[in-house]
Length: 412
Image 1 (cartoon, rainbow, N blue to C red):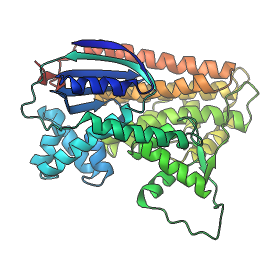
Image 2: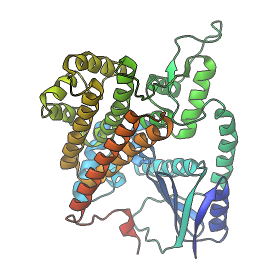
Image 3: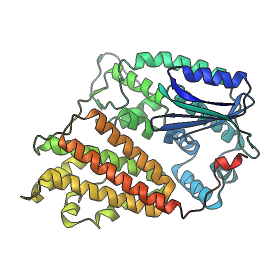
Image 4: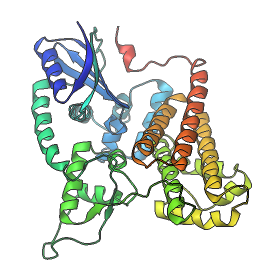
Protein backbone atom coordinates (compact mmCIF):
# COMPACT_ATOMS: atom_id res chain seq x y z
CA UNK A 1 0.00 0.00 0.00
CA UNK A 2 1.24 3.50 -0.87
CA UNK A 3 -0.19 6.66 0.70
CA UNK A 4 0.88 10.27 0.18
CA UNK A 5 -0.47 13.78 0.46
CA UNK A 6 -0.62 16.92 2.61
CA UNK A 7 -1.70 16.98 6.24
CA UNK A 8 -2.95 19.67 8.59
CA UNK A 9 -3.76 19.64 12.28
CA UNK A 10 -4.51 16.24 13.80
CA UNK A 11 -4.71 14.41 10.47
CA UNK A 12 -1.40 12.64 11.20
CA UNK A 13 -2.99 10.79 14.10
CA UNK A 14 -5.50 9.29 11.67
CA UNK A 15 -2.63 8.06 9.48
CA UNK A 16 -0.93 6.41 12.48
CA UNK A 17 -4.20 4.80 13.53
CA UNK A 18 -4.75 3.44 10.03
CA UNK A 19 -1.26 1.91 9.82
CA UNK A 20 -1.67 0.45 13.30
CA UNK A 21 -5.13 -1.04 12.68
CA UNK A 22 -4.10 -2.49 9.30
CA UNK A 23 -0.96 -3.99 10.90
CA UNK A 24 1.28 -2.45 8.27
CA UNK A 25 5.00 -3.06 7.79
CA UNK A 26 6.82 -0.20 6.09
CA UNK A 27 8.09 3.37 6.23
CA UNK A 28 6.17 6.60 6.90
CA UNK A 29 8.09 9.74 5.89
CA UNK A 30 6.79 13.10 7.10
CA UNK A 31 8.15 16.57 6.27
CA UNK A 32 7.22 20.03 7.50
CA UNK A 33 9.31 22.93 6.26
CA UNK A 34 12.93 22.04 7.04
CA UNK A 35 12.03 19.19 9.41
CA UNK A 36 11.84 15.54 8.43
CA UNK A 37 10.82 12.44 10.34
CA UNK A 38 10.82 8.75 9.37
CA UNK A 39 8.69 6.20 11.26
CA UNK A 40 9.16 2.45 10.74
CA UNK A 41 6.31 -0.02 11.29
CA UNK A 42 6.45 -3.77 11.83
CA UNK A 43 3.00 -5.41 11.76
CA UNK A 44 1.29 -2.26 13.02
CA UNK A 45 3.82 -1.53 15.78
CA UNK A 46 6.32 1.33 15.68
CA UNK A 47 9.79 -0.19 15.91
CA UNK A 48 12.03 2.77 15.03
CA UNK A 49 11.93 6.49 14.21
CA UNK A 50 14.52 9.02 13.11
CA UNK A 51 14.36 12.80 13.02
CA UNK A 52 16.37 15.53 11.32
CA UNK A 53 16.47 17.73 14.42
CA UNK A 54 19.62 17.58 16.53
CA UNK A 55 17.76 17.08 19.80
CA UNK A 56 16.32 13.79 18.55
CA UNK A 57 19.69 12.04 18.26
CA UNK A 58 20.37 9.19 20.67
CA UNK A 59 23.82 10.45 21.70
CA UNK A 60 22.46 13.94 22.33
CA UNK A 61 19.77 12.60 24.69
CA UNK A 62 22.24 10.37 26.56
CA UNK A 63 24.61 13.31 27.05
CA UNK A 64 21.76 15.64 28.03
CA UNK A 65 20.62 13.28 30.80
CA UNK A 66 24.18 12.81 32.09
CA UNK A 67 24.41 9.13 31.11
CA UNK A 68 27.59 9.75 29.10
CA UNK A 69 30.03 12.65 28.93
CA UNK A 70 30.67 14.87 25.91
CA UNK A 71 34.17 13.36 25.68
CA UNK A 72 32.81 9.80 25.65
CA UNK A 73 30.26 10.73 22.99
CA UNK A 74 32.87 12.32 20.73
CA UNK A 75 35.15 9.30 21.12
CA UNK A 76 32.37 6.85 20.24
CA UNK A 77 31.15 8.93 17.28
CA UNK A 78 34.69 8.95 15.87
CA UNK A 79 34.97 5.18 16.31
CA UNK A 80 31.59 4.72 14.68
CA UNK A 81 32.68 6.62 11.58
CA UNK A 82 35.97 4.75 11.46
CA UNK A 83 34.56 1.24 11.99
CA UNK A 84 31.14 1.84 10.36
CA UNK A 85 29.33 0.69 13.51
CA UNK A 86 26.28 2.14 15.24
CA UNK A 87 26.74 4.51 18.18
CA UNK A 88 24.70 2.19 20.42
CA UNK A 89 26.93 -0.82 19.79
CA UNK A 90 30.11 1.14 20.52
CA UNK A 91 28.67 2.63 23.73
CA UNK A 92 27.81 -0.88 24.98
CA UNK A 93 31.12 -2.40 23.85
CA UNK A 94 33.04 0.35 25.65
CA UNK A 95 31.03 -0.22 28.81
CA UNK A 96 29.67 3.34 28.88
CA UNK A 97 26.07 2.09 28.96
CA UNK A 98 24.41 -1.26 29.57
CA UNK A 99 22.21 -2.94 27.00
CA UNK A 100 19.15 -2.28 29.17
CA UNK A 101 20.02 1.43 29.35
CA UNK A 102 20.53 1.53 25.59
CA UNK A 103 17.11 -0.05 25.00
CA UNK A 104 15.50 2.38 27.45
CA UNK A 105 17.01 5.42 25.75
CA UNK A 106 16.37 4.11 22.27
CA UNK A 107 12.68 3.97 23.21
CA UNK A 108 12.91 7.43 24.78
CA UNK A 109 14.47 8.81 21.61
CA UNK A 110 11.69 7.36 19.45
CA UNK A 111 9.01 8.71 21.80
CA UNK A 112 10.48 12.24 21.75
CA UNK A 113 10.65 12.19 17.95
CA UNK A 114 7.04 11.07 17.66
CA UNK A 115 5.68 13.51 20.26
CA UNK A 116 7.39 16.31 18.35
CA UNK A 117 6.06 14.96 15.05
CA UNK A 118 2.46 14.93 16.24
CA UNK A 119 2.74 18.61 17.21
CA UNK A 120 3.51 19.63 13.61
CA UNK A 121 0.68 21.76 12.29
CA UNK A 122 1.01 20.96 8.58
CA UNK A 123 3.27 19.32 6.04
CA UNK A 124 3.51 16.34 3.68
CA UNK A 125 3.50 12.59 4.28
CA UNK A 126 4.29 9.47 2.27
CA UNK A 127 3.90 5.83 3.32
CA UNK A 128 5.24 2.77 1.49
CA UNK A 129 5.10 -0.92 2.32
CA UNK A 130 8.73 -2.02 2.75
CA UNK A 131 10.15 -5.27 4.08
CA UNK A 132 12.37 -4.51 7.06
CA UNK A 133 15.52 -6.34 8.05
CA UNK A 134 15.78 -5.76 11.82
CA UNK A 135 18.53 -8.27 12.56
CA UNK A 136 21.05 -6.80 14.99
CA UNK A 137 18.96 -3.65 15.58
CA UNK A 138 17.94 -2.31 18.99
CA UNK A 139 14.24 -1.90 18.27
CA UNK A 140 11.34 -0.57 20.28
CA UNK A 141 7.75 -1.77 20.57
CA UNK A 142 5.47 1.27 20.74
CA UNK A 143 1.71 1.25 20.52
CA UNK A 144 0.67 4.19 18.30
CA UNK A 145 -2.59 4.66 20.23
CA UNK A 146 -0.73 5.39 23.48
CA UNK A 147 1.41 7.96 21.66
CA UNK A 148 -1.64 9.59 20.10
CA UNK A 149 -3.35 10.00 23.48
CA UNK A 150 -0.28 11.64 25.03
CA UNK A 151 0.19 13.88 21.97
CA UNK A 152 -3.45 14.97 22.17
CA UNK A 153 -2.94 15.96 25.82
CA UNK A 154 0.13 17.99 24.85
CA UNK A 155 -1.73 19.72 22.02
CA UNK A 156 -4.45 20.81 24.46
CA UNK A 157 -1.84 22.17 26.89
CA UNK A 158 0.04 23.93 24.08
CA UNK A 159 -3.04 26.02 23.33
CA UNK A 160 -2.50 27.61 26.77
CA UNK A 161 1.29 27.90 26.41
CA UNK A 162 0.91 29.60 23.03
CA UNK A 163 -0.89 32.54 24.64
CA UNK A 164 2.58 33.58 25.86
CA UNK A 165 4.83 31.86 23.32
CA UNK A 166 3.23 32.96 20.08
CA UNK A 167 6.21 32.05 17.88
CA UNK A 168 9.39 29.96 18.08
CA UNK A 169 11.24 33.09 16.95
CA UNK A 170 10.47 35.12 20.08
CA UNK A 171 13.38 36.30 22.22
CA UNK A 172 13.12 36.54 26.01
CA UNK A 173 15.38 38.30 28.50
CA UNK A 174 15.84 38.03 32.27
CA UNK A 175 13.98 40.71 34.26
CA UNK A 176 15.88 40.36 37.53
CA UNK A 177 12.73 40.48 39.65
CA UNK A 178 9.60 38.49 40.48
CA UNK A 179 6.00 39.64 40.46
CA UNK A 180 5.34 38.69 44.07
CA UNK A 181 8.42 39.12 46.23
CA UNK A 182 6.70 37.48 49.20
CA UNK A 183 6.74 34.16 47.37
CA UNK A 184 10.01 32.26 47.28
CA UNK A 185 10.54 30.67 43.88
CA UNK A 186 12.44 27.40 43.85
CA UNK A 187 13.57 26.27 40.42
CA UNK A 188 14.38 22.67 39.58
CA UNK A 189 17.44 21.62 37.53
CA UNK A 190 15.53 21.70 34.24
CA UNK A 191 14.24 25.22 34.89
CA UNK A 192 17.72 26.44 35.81
CA UNK A 193 19.05 24.92 32.59
CA UNK A 194 16.53 26.82 30.44
CA UNK A 195 16.95 30.04 32.45
CA UNK A 196 20.71 29.88 31.84
CA UNK A 197 20.07 29.93 28.06
CA UNK A 198 17.80 32.98 28.15
CA UNK A 199 20.11 35.90 27.38
CA UNK A 200 18.08 38.38 25.34
CA UNK A 201 19.58 37.05 22.11
CA UNK A 202 18.57 33.40 21.68
CA UNK A 203 15.22 32.65 20.07
CA UNK A 204 12.88 29.99 21.46
CA UNK A 205 13.96 27.73 18.59
CA UNK A 206 17.64 28.17 19.51
CA UNK A 207 16.93 27.45 23.18
CA UNK A 208 15.15 24.21 22.24
CA UNK A 209 18.10 23.19 20.05
CA UNK A 210 20.83 24.09 22.56
CA UNK A 211 19.08 22.73 25.66
CA UNK A 212 18.57 19.24 24.24
CA UNK A 213 15.03 19.18 25.66
CA UNK A 214 12.01 18.62 23.46
CA UNK A 215 9.92 21.58 22.32
CA UNK A 216 7.00 20.87 24.66
CA UNK A 217 9.22 20.74 27.76
CA UNK A 218 10.94 24.03 26.85
CA UNK A 219 7.62 25.78 26.18
CA UNK A 220 6.28 24.69 29.59
CA UNK A 221 9.37 25.93 31.42
CA UNK A 222 9.44 29.29 29.59
CA UNK A 223 5.74 29.74 30.30
CA UNK A 224 6.43 29.13 34.03
CA UNK A 225 9.47 31.43 34.15
CA UNK A 226 7.41 34.16 32.49
CA UNK A 227 4.59 33.61 35.01
CA UNK A 228 7.09 33.91 37.88
CA UNK A 229 8.18 37.28 36.44
CA UNK A 230 11.76 36.09 35.97
CA UNK A 231 11.76 36.64 32.20
CA UNK A 232 9.98 38.87 29.70
CA UNK A 233 9.79 39.16 25.93
CA UNK A 234 12.47 41.36 24.39
CA UNK A 235 11.74 43.94 21.72
CA UNK A 236 13.75 42.95 18.66
CA UNK A 237 16.40 45.13 17.00
CA UNK A 238 15.50 45.42 13.32
CA UNK A 239 17.74 45.71 10.28
CA UNK A 240 17.18 49.09 8.58
CA UNK A 241 18.66 51.65 6.22
CA UNK A 242 18.69 54.46 8.81
CA UNK A 243 22.38 55.20 9.02
CA UNK A 244 25.14 53.50 10.99
CA UNK A 245 24.42 54.09 14.65
CA UNK A 246 24.99 51.60 17.43
CA UNK A 247 21.58 49.94 17.05
CA UNK A 248 21.99 49.56 13.28
CA UNK A 249 25.40 47.93 13.72
CA UNK A 250 23.96 45.75 16.49
CA UNK A 251 21.27 44.34 14.20
CA UNK A 252 23.81 43.34 11.53
CA UNK A 253 26.17 41.82 14.11
CA UNK A 254 23.32 39.91 15.76
CA UNK A 255 22.27 38.21 12.51
CA UNK A 256 25.78 37.03 11.65
CA UNK A 257 26.55 36.18 15.27
CA UNK A 258 23.49 33.88 15.34
CA UNK A 259 24.82 32.19 12.19
CA UNK A 260 28.34 31.67 13.54
CA UNK A 261 27.06 30.54 16.94
CA UNK A 262 24.91 27.89 15.24
CA UNK A 263 27.99 26.73 13.29
CA UNK A 264 30.02 26.46 16.51
CA UNK A 265 27.29 24.46 18.28
CA UNK A 266 27.08 22.03 15.36
CA UNK A 267 30.80 21.28 15.25
CA UNK A 268 31.48 21.10 19.01
CA UNK A 269 30.18 17.54 19.18
CA UNK A 270 32.43 16.47 16.30
CA UNK A 271 35.59 18.44 17.06
CA UNK A 272 35.53 18.99 20.83
CA UNK A 273 38.06 21.63 21.93
CA UNK A 274 39.26 22.04 18.34
CA UNK A 275 35.90 23.60 17.41
CA UNK A 276 36.67 26.94 19.08
CA UNK A 277 40.14 27.16 17.54
CA UNK A 278 38.76 26.89 13.99
CA UNK A 279 37.37 30.42 14.24
CA UNK A 280 40.69 31.86 15.44
CA UNK A 281 42.63 30.03 12.73
CA UNK A 282 40.35 31.50 10.05
CA UNK A 283 40.59 34.97 11.60
CA UNK A 284 44.33 34.99 10.92
CA UNK A 285 43.69 34.55 7.17
CA UNK A 286 41.36 37.56 6.81
CA UNK A 287 42.29 40.83 5.12
CA UNK A 288 43.82 43.38 7.50
CA UNK A 289 40.68 45.51 7.98
CA UNK A 290 38.50 42.48 8.60
CA UNK A 291 41.02 40.93 10.97
CA UNK A 292 40.96 44.16 12.97
CA UNK A 293 37.14 44.10 13.16
CA UNK A 294 37.11 40.55 14.52
CA UNK A 295 40.17 40.93 16.76
CA UNK A 296 38.19 40.27 19.96
CA UNK A 297 35.26 38.46 18.37
CA UNK A 298 34.41 34.80 18.93
CA UNK A 299 31.02 33.06 18.68
CA UNK A 300 31.56 31.48 22.10
CA UNK A 301 31.56 34.96 23.69
CA UNK A 302 28.36 36.48 25.02
CA UNK A 303 26.49 38.25 22.22
CA UNK A 304 26.60 41.65 23.94
CA UNK A 305 30.38 41.34 24.31
CA UNK A 306 30.77 40.58 20.61
CA UNK A 307 28.60 43.55 19.65
CA UNK A 308 30.59 45.94 21.84
CA UNK A 309 33.98 44.72 20.62
CA UNK A 310 33.06 45.00 16.93
CA UNK A 311 31.44 48.44 17.26
CA UNK A 312 34.58 49.67 19.05
CA UNK A 313 36.71 48.54 16.09
CA UNK A 314 34.49 49.55 13.17
CA UNK A 315 34.67 53.30 13.81
CA UNK A 316 38.43 53.35 13.31
CA UNK A 317 38.37 51.85 9.82
CA UNK A 318 35.46 53.57 8.05
CA UNK A 319 36.44 54.83 4.59
CA UNK A 320 35.04 57.47 2.28
CA UNK A 321 34.25 54.96 -0.48
CA UNK A 322 32.82 52.34 1.88
CA UNK A 323 30.51 52.86 4.87
CA UNK A 324 30.97 51.13 8.19
CA UNK A 325 27.97 48.90 7.48
CA UNK A 326 29.37 47.83 4.13
CA UNK A 327 32.72 46.98 5.69
CA UNK A 328 30.93 45.08 8.45
CA UNK A 329 28.74 43.03 6.10
CA UNK A 330 31.62 42.31 3.71
CA UNK A 331 33.80 41.29 6.65
CA UNK A 332 31.20 38.91 8.06
CA UNK A 333 30.59 37.41 4.60
CA UNK A 334 34.31 36.76 4.19
CA UNK A 335 34.69 35.37 7.71
CA UNK A 336 31.64 33.10 7.41
CA UNK A 337 32.70 31.75 4.01
CA UNK A 338 36.21 30.90 5.18
CA UNK A 339 34.92 29.25 8.36
CA UNK A 340 32.52 27.05 6.38
CA UNK A 341 35.22 26.06 3.88
CA UNK A 342 37.61 25.08 6.68
CA UNK A 343 34.95 23.02 8.44
CA UNK A 344 34.04 21.29 5.16
CA UNK A 345 37.70 20.38 4.67
CA UNK A 346 37.87 18.90 8.18
CA UNK A 347 34.50 17.16 8.54
CA UNK A 348 33.36 16.46 4.99
CA UNK A 349 29.88 16.59 3.46
CA UNK A 350 27.37 15.14 5.95
CA UNK A 351 27.91 17.52 8.91
CA UNK A 352 27.95 20.47 6.48
CA UNK A 353 24.43 19.68 5.31
CA UNK A 354 23.08 20.18 8.83
CA UNK A 355 25.14 23.35 9.33
CA UNK A 356 23.95 24.90 6.05
CA UNK A 357 20.35 23.99 6.82
CA UNK A 358 20.49 25.81 10.17
CA UNK A 359 22.01 28.87 8.51
CA UNK A 360 19.21 28.78 5.97
CA UNK A 361 16.68 28.65 8.82
CA UNK A 362 18.21 31.76 10.42
CA UNK A 363 18.14 33.66 7.14
CA UNK A 364 14.58 32.49 6.54
CA UNK A 365 13.63 34.07 9.86
CA UNK A 366 15.36 37.35 8.93
CA UNK A 367 13.59 37.36 5.58
CA UNK A 368 10.18 36.74 7.13
CA UNK A 369 10.24 38.85 10.30
CA UNK A 370 12.56 41.81 9.70
CA UNK A 371 11.10 44.92 8.09
CA UNK A 372 11.90 45.49 4.43
CA UNK A 373 15.17 47.36 3.87
CA UNK A 374 18.09 47.36 1.46
CA UNK A 375 20.30 46.15 4.30
CA UNK A 376 18.04 43.16 5.00
CA UNK A 377 17.91 42.20 1.32
CA UNK A 378 21.68 42.55 1.01
CA UNK A 379 22.35 40.22 3.95
CA UNK A 380 19.72 37.67 2.88
CA UNK A 381 21.09 37.58 -0.68
CA UNK A 382 24.75 37.44 0.39
CA UNK A 383 24.24 34.61 2.89
CA UNK A 384 22.04 32.72 0.42
CA UNK A 385 24.89 32.96 -2.11
CA UNK A 386 27.31 31.60 0.50
CA UNK A 387 24.99 28.64 1.17
CA UNK A 388 24.57 28.01 -2.57
CA UNK A 389 28.32 28.12 -3.10
CA UNK A 390 28.97 25.63 -0.31
CA UNK A 391 26.14 23.35 -1.47
CA UNK A 392 27.56 23.33 -4.99
CA UNK A 393 31.03 22.58 -3.65
CA UNK A 394 29.74 19.74 -1.45
CA UNK A 395 27.63 18.35 -4.28
CA UNK A 396 30.69 18.09 -6.49
CA UNK A 397 32.75 16.34 -3.85
CA UNK A 398 29.90 13.96 -3.01
CA UNK A 399 30.18 12.36 -6.44
CA UNK A 400 33.73 11.31 -5.57
CA UNK A 401 32.69 9.58 -2.35
CA UNK A 402 31.67 5.98 -1.84
CA UNK A 403 28.25 5.49 -0.33
CA UNK A 404 28.35 4.60 3.37
CA UNK A 405 26.40 1.84 5.04
CA UNK A 406 23.87 3.77 7.10
CA UNK A 407 20.61 2.71 8.67
CA UNK A 408 18.82 2.37 5.34
CA UNK A 409 21.24 -0.36 4.26
CA UNK A 410 19.25 -2.55 6.66
CA UNK A 411 16.32 -2.57 4.27
CA UNK A 412 16.09 -5.05 1.48
